[in-house]
Image (cartoon, rainbow, N blue to C red; front, side, top):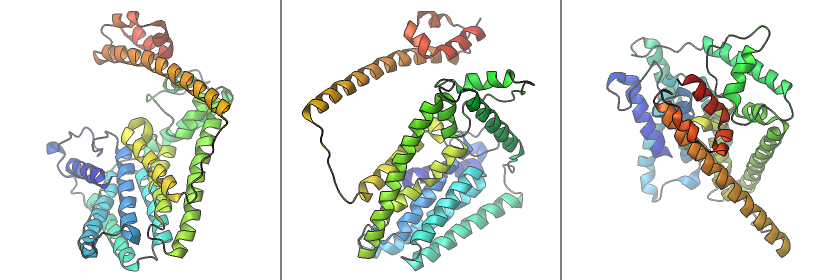
Length: 374
């Protein structure tokens, strides 16, 4: 993960220091790496900061043989300062909030284990913040300071209208995949109508997205997922308490992994990174699965009756087959829609050959393309 974060740091650093000669072209005035979205990049960089802190603070992750520890510590301190400098320069408040929260919690929880590394980490973090802030305020940067005033107003109005949509259809919601369409029409149909200044594909909050589209059923699903995450965090903390008292070599790792996922979890409540980046989703799941695996102290295996197991296997097979059929028709429709939209809806005749199920699954997008096309 740190290799990936380092690669993104190099690409984003090029965009910041030499935007006209960067490997990944820069459009606009915000650094975004390969994600084309500054906040998504910032949450990944903040995750890199927390991973570096974990490697510095926990003795169980020290290098072997011990003679390499000095070189390793120097490299990690340098990476920590570089990541922090870039995070400041990205000017993402979401990244700042997630990075600060995770770093403070890691230092508070594990800072007393290795005080030498803790002092070095604090110096590296402070130095990165000072260097990034000085560079931003010096006026020598090729990219201007970001103005978040318009973003604040847009987020507030979006939150207000999303809550109004939830109140309007609290039980069944507005339908999965339909937020972009329904949100614009809901605003237009208000009295008085709200001027539409942007096309909003999500409400910048993952829980609200599930609830506004799925209603009470979606809220139930979100509650189950949050409960599962809570189980992982609780068992990690309980495991580490006993492991730290016993002096276990890998003590603290499960809790640290949970805290490392905090920047991305924070981002889901202020943006929506999993919609924009598969890498973020995979990283988040990997961190939680590692914390779950390492933090489980007792291995248990629950078995079902043979008859129940057989019936359940048939049900799961039927569900898997149904999902595969729907996925196939959806893929067929997505390929056709992409072909049509790639050329600006100049020729929408391929939409006429779509199977009825594909049209139904992607009805709003098909209708939009047919109305825009000639």
